[in-house]
Length: 174
Length: 174
DNA sequence: TAATTAATTGTAATAATATAACAATAATTG
DNA sequence: CAATTATTGTTATATTATTACAATTAATTA
Image (cartoon, rainbow over all chains, first blue to last red; front, side, top):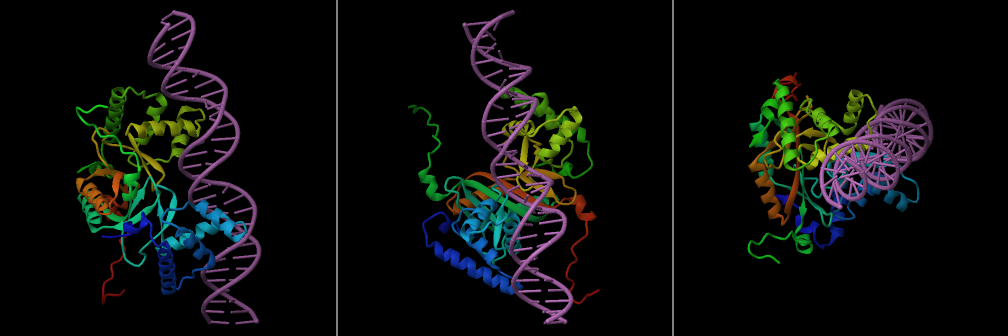
């Protein structure tokens, strides 16, 4: 299993995440002879501000604010498409939002752990999940080509923060 | 594993699917003291025209056409919300579309097999997948509350229909 | 049963996300 | 440098979904 769940939900030196992501992006782009233009890099940079996904229109807002000029949707969507294509970011279908990929270099089918409390998202890739999915699909005669797996719940820190649903305690009524 | 993959992708007596779905819906509604009004039933009926999911605006179109009067978005979205709430239909996040649930009465976390060729969608529920997801999440300290699992690929009939991606055959160039 | 309340539907307006089409500009290649 | 290709700018619009409030219908209760 690869995962960034140990850092994503906790205090950490996020600057390192950002730096690593940008470095990997540059590598990947030069390997593929693709151009990491200023706009594309800015979008990636914004997505790596935190481990919380950003909607396209938030990106447009922030980019407009930081650049001083009005950035329009196609500009951002094109940058997002480029980054998606290269595997540098992912789109979360359940949130209509985008997030940086922490390990673009390792082949993986991804699987997202979305914390409903803090909004942070960790990415995992676990063989057990993939195998279960593929073999279940096979039993149904279905050939898997791609998967979308998005899990909603609570990350470790938020489990202690958030109101617990009161357990039924038989015989103990308050 | 429960699944409707054996029927969903093949010729079958679809009228039975429809009838069963409507019967289950009526049961569930009376059990929950919820009202299956004409609009709600029409929407459910439309979603059971086939095993292909339908977007909200397609439903609006079809409902407007069949009823002769202009049905507006909130009407349909309200019916969809009602049906979702009761577990009679599902929303597919990757398609922004809705589909009838073939087994609303059994508790299940669902898992969709979306055929990219014919567009039909089967629903499965497999313990192996759930267990893999939950245990992987646990290893990341994450408490799962709900899951979205949508698999894109080819159903059995379409596997024989569709162009195969040419396998690399070393030494055999054409 | 009439009066009251609650649930459902109608309607207008608009929000949020995403794309199409074409012009302008910048970068790369021959 | 000229020609080509890739990228960005711009206008317009498509698609999906929600808000807010009015009207109506059904259920409940006095």
